[in-house]
Length: 65
Image 1 (cartoon, rainbow, N blue to C red):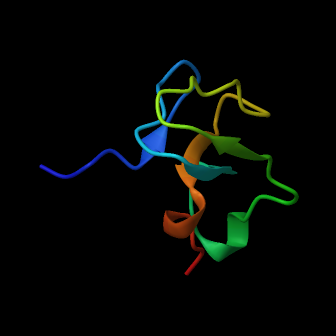
Image 2 (image 1 turned 45 degrees about the vertical axis):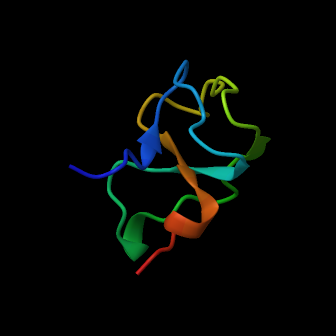
């Protein structure tokens, strides 16, 4: 089983870094315009996203195909 890559409000950051919002459907047709970006330290709690259909993902792993 792999490491979790998407996080919701209240989850703890597993590693320091920059995290961004991603949508439920991650195709290029539904790319989020102006997603929130946050800088987190290990153990910080994720804040609420712009809407309930979004999650947090580390920037290096949030590439759009």
